[in-house]
Image 1: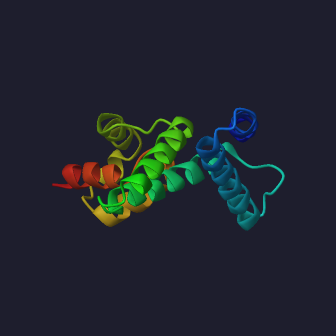
Image 2 (image 1 turned 30 degrees about the vertical axis):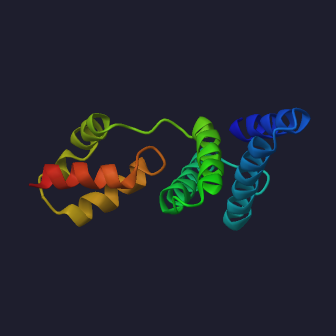
Length: 145
């Protein structure tokens, strides 16, 4: 569903001559297709894979915005516009409180061991694509103290 939405948005951007939006959405679609081909599911792309690719692209563009020198304001604005467009398609990520609730509900036995590595290994499989890894790490570290 989300891939079809992106395709329709790309066509609409092409018709509106919105070059920045068209390029941003087009790059998202091609990244999703590449990931699907690499995973061997070219025809039936799961929604979770689309979300993971969008989050990865969002992170990449955020790094571009952050590392762009201030002297290149034109590039910085272009990267920021692209970031804003990709942000529209990004799935809503879990907050720290929601992550903590999931951890306490599903992984309470692991939390009692205080073994951060074991907890992270189990949790990342469950929450990958639903929450930012850094936020998960912070919550786990706080719970392991």
